[in-house]
Length: 218
Image (tube, rainbow, N blue to C red; front, side, top):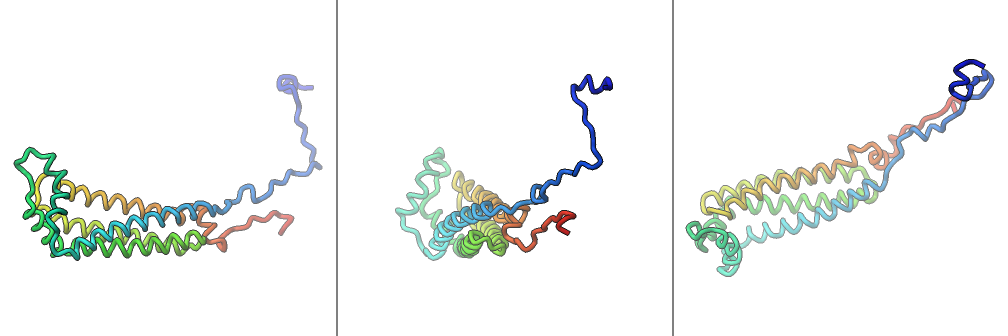
């Protein structure tokens, strides 16, 4: 017995006739994940409902020629209460802003754009629940449309706000522009996940799955 055998406490002997252990090929193969795309589909459905709510609000503002004094007072109550009284916005100022925002097409662009994006997300989410890969592509297109129309419409509304509003309310419309872009960018990333993740992509496109074979199977 050699010194190395004594130190290690065991000896390993290789027999040339000993069969090699065979590891099933599927151990190393990427397995499809059907739960991931379905979870994304549910989130897209919820996002579509949120877009429908935002779209309804903008379309309603676009169709409203004049806001009632009660509605304007309710909108201005919070921003006016946060100032020192020198930059309070009057009802007439806000009505002029509302008219300018309508004439710029900002409400219409953002409202109808987000509404169409919501429809695409809704259909894409339903398709993902059925593991249809086209649903992810449709959802990415819808989210991209929502981001472009949302940012563009928000910038038009902000332009009207820059002309007629001051103080906290002006800052609110500026933040809304950035917030719309960030939220829709996150929606694009969410919709693209099933196309990026290898396991999810196999579940959506099972025909692209590569099957590993052993020498004996060949």
